[in-house]
Image (cartoon, rainbow, N blue to C red; front, side, top):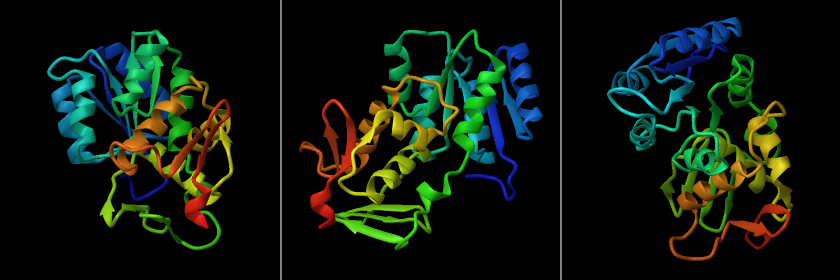
Length: 237
């Protein structure tokens, strides 16, 4: 991902031109480079060729809708995605996250809120992603290399989204410590995040799908019922 400097590149895929222009103005105000596409298929080609740091993705698009865009992109890229959607129910929002989105903003939206969500996702949290101590840790069959951002399960590389990676880093850094959903939201998204607290459940489910043994009870990330999540302390013994 990314750019050679601290300036982030954001791809906006939105077919409504006034809306796309408004988003572009607010993102440029924050100092981001902005690429705009009004077609889903062209937007996907742009995402693959330009490797933006973040994508703002409308769901209803010509050429290729946002859902299919996300599915295709997630097959080989983990670029953060913020969905723009007119669907406002909690179920619809969580479904968008389950498909591989990192966040969502409901239309009609505040451009200031959208800009804040972009800042929250792009903000790097060095203490989470590069904790003090060993740069490489292994627990059971799971290995994480903080220096290279590499995650291995039984020697096989696993491609995590930035949010999933931050969650794993947070949990594995202190095995046995129980994190509430609100704690994980602040560590993964930053203090500006104002979305659903339940969104963490979706990201944890997606993370488990990638690292946990198939068809078995979670080995690495345990649910503490009524509270939140923890990394299995027995694997750190």
